[in-house]
Length: 441
Image (cartoon, rainbow, N blue to C red):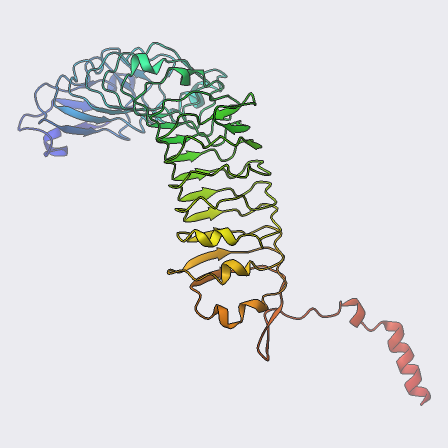
């Protein structure tokens, strides 16, 4: 049982009046919470994280001075419909890590000032059994100022809320790490949306129309098979049409095997694209044309056999092509024109010859070229006068070369391969024959 007087616990946030009492026990009769009125200074932040709370009754606080309320990592299973009605100045409400039934959200009623609502990692499913369908009904209250809604890791399988109706100013929506099997609700997002996080849902769902104001889009680890613009041919496509202000796109860990030539036509301001862990075998010749702001491109763990054309990416700093099936790298002269490139990873491919045209290229800064775990057997070309002034960190770990030459110097980098043990073993029969021959002599 916990009994506290707030004058002792939180002297900064409260006036000289004493809050009567707050009980946070585990017994049924010790789960009521009551605050007296007019004790908080304006802008008060209340943190009740990990205090053992189990239920929130009527009128949690009768004051408009509390700006932020944190009730995370408790055991709250019940919230009264009237719990937060009189907290008229509340802007941030966080109730993550509890055991609230998300199918009964009647306490989520109209609130005029709430800007951020966070209910992540709810443990209701684990307490009451693995219920197959946890759906969020379209009975949200009206939140005219809500900008952030986060329901991450809540085992949600269905989300039917028309957010443009209930949260007209929403900017960030996080429904990641759930089991949502339909993205139909995306048809009813407010145009104010800037950050959409739907990662790790495993949803084989089409995404054809998104608000044009989106800056950040995370759809990694779902079931998308195609990236497209206006021309979408797959049933599980992601259309990037009219997403002019998109800055970050993460679609790693999907089943993408097709990128239409117009996929990035409208995303002219994108700065980071993650296409890793897919099934991309090739891309159209000029699919990245016009992406002059792109700084980071990740395409590792795909099925690429050649390096895609990237001659228009004149702001590129980081390029990851590791874990593909690339063999030929002698045609990468165009990469020399990308003066901003700081990191190029070609590790775990099938490269046999050093890309000397890149290595010889002189940059004004030190950069990294990674060629780990390839099939390079000869590195003699590194030891010429052309390489004397190169500012390059070259990674060649776990390649099969065992020596290199520098002028008349031969340097071995690995132990020479010795004959097998069997070929050096003297058999018992041989020893007996040798002994017999010795006696006869």
